[in-house]
Length: 347
Ligand SMILES: Cc1ncc(C[n+]2csc(CCOP(=O)(O)OP(=O)(O)O)c2C)c(N)n1
Ligand SMILES: [Mg+2]
Image (cartoon, rainbow, N blue to C red; front, side, top):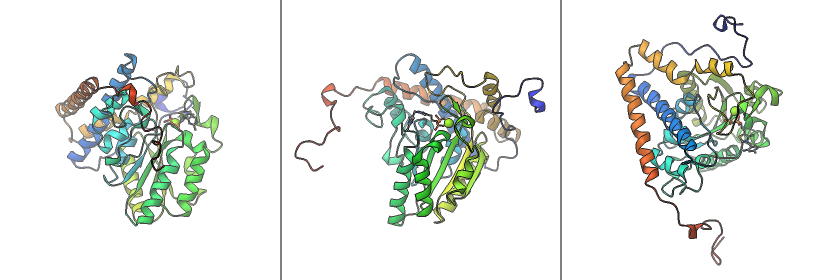
């Protein structure tokens, strides 16, 4: 039992030590990282509220607690790179540059949304920012990412395709097929595993014989690095180095970000599969407040600057809700549009 746990019973999945050490970024970049984590946090807190009010329906998976992964990794890419994500992808869409109003309208099911309200929370897609989904199928994004990377390689571009997926995807056949082909053909894929230790209500040690996920990459002769996913500096540094390596034509790389979701798997989840004390322990490693504390300790952030960033995030959320509320529903007559090729048209 660690000193920090005192007399309490040890939890099943202890959190790592809180992130510490210097933040090796200038103030504007450090504040950009913090601002993006806050934007995701405030957006999702509002989304949870709107779900309760039945404004948002269907499935809703929150990224709260995991923000350092998406923000740190995506800021290691260029706007021209490709991104494939999962159904827990609100943050990825925001960081890629999707307008929060358009994102919120999609969650509302309004036609002003990025997929005209037909995809919802799990299917955010934006060709402009090269976000190739949101995918509801566990492991479904992996073959897509490999296909995108194959196209890039054939066309001789220097684009990296970053593929985000959960630990649960590692148990899927598509993961192994994607890893194998990407390694065999030396494709420019950055595999980013968001290991939050659970796949729905099942802990990783209950469904994986090998819980060190980097070992899986090694079996495909692919370099792999694990990083503390609660530490945005560790995430960003790992992703920056890996992206450069992939971009230089050295084939794919696997990154495992060890993280934790603070909320339920989706909006229907009694969370009977994990200890409250475990959740509380990980919350003390929250990526936003630990990063905030480090920046303050280094004199890179004053309390009023933090409050201003937070206020700006809340204004953006309020504007996004107003945009979604003012949006419109697609006409019922259009229900079958895009489902079938019109008769006589080329397939
Ligand atoms: C192929 C497939 N099987 C099962 C499901 C049901 N399902 C939805 S989320 C999920 C857990 C996935 O966990 P993980 O990949 O770790 O992602 P996390 O939710 O933890 O981010 C499962 C099994 C699904 N969507 N797709
Ligand atoms: Mg998981």
